[in-house]
Length: 236
Image (cartoon, rainbow, N blue to C red; front, side, top):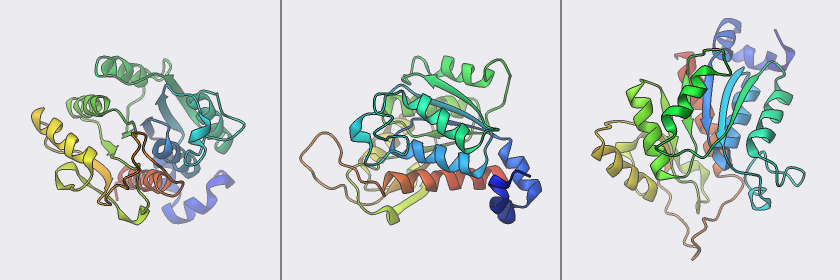
């Protein structure tokens, strides 16, 4: 057993740890939420990850994204993420896709992910940490059609209280503006359920179209999602 994960194995047991570590998790979006999902899954010991993002690290990302450092500004997030994941766990196999997710390319992108670089591999969990509503809807539709387990992150911008995050079904949400839009769009498409992470906190009014952010809110959201993913993969 790799000493890197010996303290994790103390909590999971060796057999369960090995089983969970061999799962394939797909993370869409490597921003404030998605970067911490990757970080936590890598540090747990997940060995197969597919990561999807088209952005480069911007200096304004440093306040909340784990991959954003002065030394990584200007680099592709997927490349920084892949290096970091493998630095945490050299056994990890990471497939990085430089892609902006759109309704019209979701299916073809998912087929590439299934292929996993020529090695056919099932998808055990999908994490949606992207911002675009149309892409979130397309991903939810695909996962429903192909019976894939999905958790979708709702809005974390303009919020200050990480203790208010909940994981629940989209139709049980309230307050969150993104949840309201998602509920309508999903209902119109006949999607009757979707597991989401969201907050009932009223967004801070900043007067700017660009959402404000702080280090301890999206990070907690990402860690909550990662914890949920591991729990579901364990079957407990």
